[in-house]
Amino acid sequence: MRSGGQKLGFHCFALILSSLFIFGCSGSGSNVVEGTQSLNDAQTNVQTDVPDPMIQLRTRVDLEITVPAYQSDALQVKVQWGGTESNAAWIGDELWALSLDLLSDTEYLLTITFSDNNGQILLGSYEYTYHTGFNDAEFIQVTAQQFNTERWDTDEDGVSNLEELIKGLDPLVNEDLLLPIQEYSPAVEFFVERFESHVTEERPLSITFAPHPNNPDQDSLSGTLDVDTEGNGALIHNEKFGSRYTNLSGIRTHSQDSVSWEGDIKAYDGTDYLTTANLTSTVSRVDDQTYKVIYEINRRSVGTYVFDLRASADFQGKLVDETSQCEPVAGTYSSSFVNGVERTRKDITISKAAQDSYWRVVTTTESLNHEDGTETTEYFARDLIEIEGAEQVEFRFKCDFVDYQPQ
Image 1 (cartoon, rainbow, N blue to C red):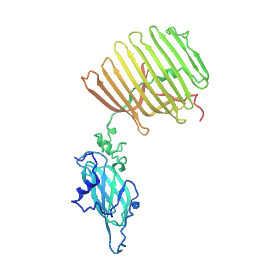
Image 2: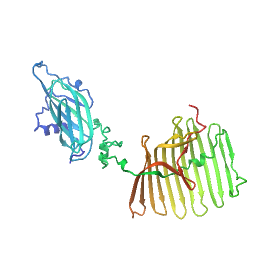
Image 3: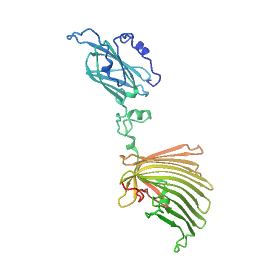
Image 4: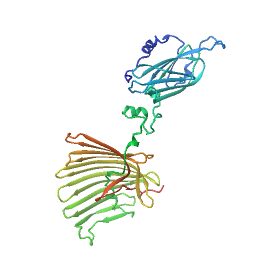
């Protein structure tokens, strides 16, 4: 099997090839050209005899080629120069070699291609304009780093053929096209709006919260909100309905083109569960229509059972016309949720590049009892949703703030 490992020394390389061609290790007429060094610059040791213009002189060029690491029994390294095309010989590990008899004082494009499946799947290529000199022999060394592997992506899925093969995927099949498409993703956890929803555009802003006289179901409401002319401030908001309560406390920070929150939530459901959460969030303006939100949430509910959530996101959004809300159009979201009742952990990853049509959703559910193993599902989603109260709504985030400085 052709595989990756220890590089062979040049003298060992010469000995191995001695049965194939004559090689003068001590000959003064050989040149060594490595990497992208100018090959013409290396050809300084030219024979002093003036060549007969009627005789076609030849130069033997010995190539030592180290390809990117990949194991297969059907690898091939092909070398093209001028009108010649030859297959290099595998020496061991990633090392290949070839000796060519070329016309002296001639320039052509040297192309080396590295492929699998006996030339059917291209993995990498190297190109260099090479000019032979008048020496009897010259030496060229090409390293694995000089191969361009990213350009070879047969199924056009954004992952190179080499990377897909290393991961055990089929580089001829775009796996994305095989996934089912659903209308919505799993619910995205986002608590920042609980804080920002109390902030209006008035600057400076000062509010004292109290129960509304026309709302008999509201046992108590207290707290304050203070935001200065620069958009910096603090929120304390306490609600109580019977034995249930929710307390918010957070700090709002504004810079020229971003608004950040750092806050805590404490809630009791009136029967069993006490929930605590903390979050950090920053919304920043990229341009008049493009915004970013980066946030992280840690939440824990303790009662008869324990529920833990860790979630983070980095979304890019587009401003929705005639609103201050943004619709996420690209980015990533990840969460890990431990369900104390079912004794499972569910990990969710949602991602989308700007050029993609759908959000890619990967959900992995693992039994914490190690009895049922792990189950993974994967699909595309047209849109993101968020839990708002008891309802599922399209996920949007506040992005356009009066606090931003004019551009």
